[in-house]
Image (cartoon, rainbow, N blue to C red):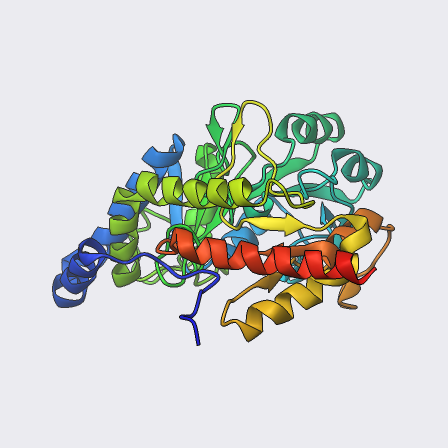
Length: 373
């Protein structure tokens, strides 16, 4: 059987291993936060934003951020129906209601018109999730947020390397959150980050992230409020420091992989991730959307991948289809696109030959379907 083509896995070099070994051997006592603080400073520098708090996950970062801006019982938060469940879970765990709305057909991100139509006096925030590296229309969403006096926050878990009109994804809204899970463009194994340009919000979340113990509090073990425990470890942050030193290389590789797919798929009737004008897509996960007439081929393509030792992923399911959250609005684009889309393998060390294998299988299934008619 041909060698396995993974859909994603991290690129870990001697640089990251060396930092992790140092943290494991020496990162204790008065050095126990050394790599964490270094990672936070370097990530802020990368984003061009003053404040970063490294966390154990993007979900934890979103949970704390929403709590810090006052989301709670009875509130509503508007977000796209196409999302990983974690985005809605953070809302749910605060006692608020996730309001699921449709996506834009081209970007697969939240449709600003649908978001505005969903706003009520209970709305506290809009979550702009930059899906698969694609960027939300942040100008339109910010106009809506300002008009109704709600917070616009960014779920940039999948958007390392994506840039919206000169500003990096995650640095634009009231706050942003990131994931450094092992599947992401840069990784700490598990991990995430909360980022903001708001000094007061930063201090609030910093206190929440340390069990409610405020910075500068002289009383040992004194908590001023009930907080959370979403801290990252020094060893994880050490790996992240190495990854950040390579971030431009890692993003470029993602973009090169996407361009190779785009080149090879140019003669096949599929659409791919959007890169809007004046924006840069980090292309975390190259994704093909089959045309309407080929909707039924998604599962056939994935089965063919499996038979040929290739990993592929379905598009995120609409959250409204899970039966876990209230479904107030119809989301036809979300449901339609989800049935026709496939995430393609895109790990750092994938070869051109591997990409050709993937594209040849897609083409073979599509051609077979055409010939069967």
